[in-house]
Image (cartoon, rainbow, N blue to C red; front, side, top):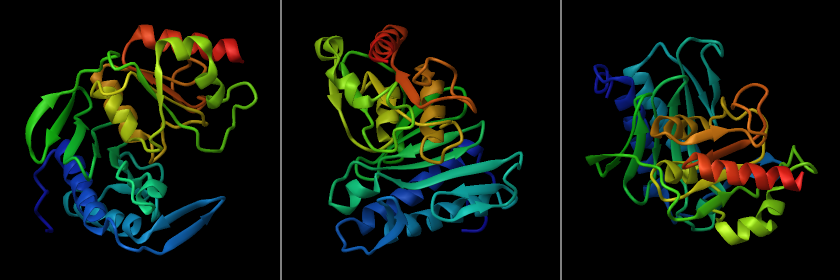
Length: 266
C-alpha cells in the first residue's frame, strides 16, 4: 500500500481515503460496539477509530509529509502546516450506533480537494477545488447540480446552541413561511451537505461557531462551494473565523428566504 496512491492527485487521495473509511464503516455495521465516552453526551465507537486508521493509511502512503487533523486521533504534524488534511471518519456516530445508515465519511485537504463518502449507497461526492462530482461504486462520475426542487431543508437540532436566544433552529421549523415553502428533515450527519450539492436537498442549516476548519464540515463546505451552492453563516456573513454556524442553499432565492425567516425570529 505504501506507493499505491503516490502518483495520485489530491482529489484522488481524498476519494481513496473516504472510500477506505467507508469500507470500514460498512463492514463493521450491525456489530455490538463499545462506546468511547467523549463527554457532554458525545462518544465514538471502534468503527470511528478503525475508519480513521484506514483513512490515515491512505494519506500517509500518498502524502507522508502532510499534517492531519483527525476527529479521533487529533493533530498529527504542525497545526499551521501549509498542507493539512481534515478527517471525520464517521459523521453520524449516534445514528450508526443505533442501526441507522445515515452517516458520512469526510476527508478534506485544507483549501483544496475534498470527498464525502456514503458508506451504504456507494456514492462518493468529491471536488478538485473547482468543480464537484459524484462517483457511484468507483464509476460513472456525474457533475453535481444543486436544485431547490425538492423543497427539503435539513436542520441540525443537536446541541450546543451558541447563538440562542437570537437564533434557535427549532424556531425556524415553526416559522409560518418555512411551513409554507419547505419541508424539514433532520438526518444528524453532514451527508446532508453533499445532498444539497447533489440537488437532493434545497438547503442545510446549523448553528455553531466558525465551522470552516471543522473536521465535520470542511469537506461538505468545499463540496458545496465547488458545486455552486450559496454558503454563509446564519448571519449571512462569509464562513470564517468570525462566522456563526452555517447556511448552505441550492440557490440565492432559497438562501434569501431562509435568511429572512431567521432574522424575523431573532
